[in-house]
Picture 1: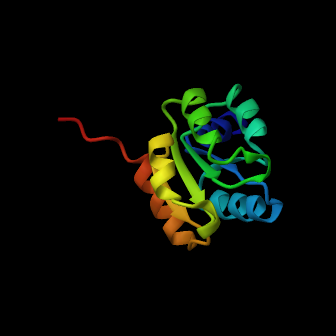
Picture 2 (picture 1 turned 90 degrees about the vertical axis):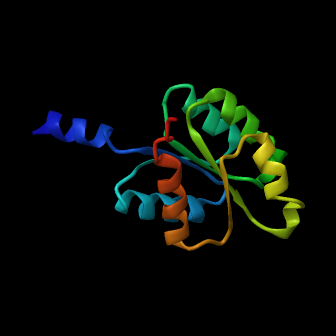
Length: 135
């Protein structure tokens, strides 16, 4: 039974949530695990890169504004560390200037404006996990 459970758990898509706010990390982790995902959390860009050197993830949810200036600068580094992972940047709003205009060229696959509904978050993750149609 233990091996079967472990195999089933490894089949779940793995998400990495990067946010400097412990309340946001906890909320995302609880909500996304209840939705059936395996969730890893990191409180900084450096912590996320350390995790990614040991783990492969399907989708990265990255806060785009964190102390230490590692929000927007982190997206290209995530793209290099995990080229096959999808990156959803979480934009906090007006304090971030152009937001979406800056994040897509840096390597974000999608941008969500915080705060967002749980359903919007799930829709964005689901869209990123869909296989690419081949022509």
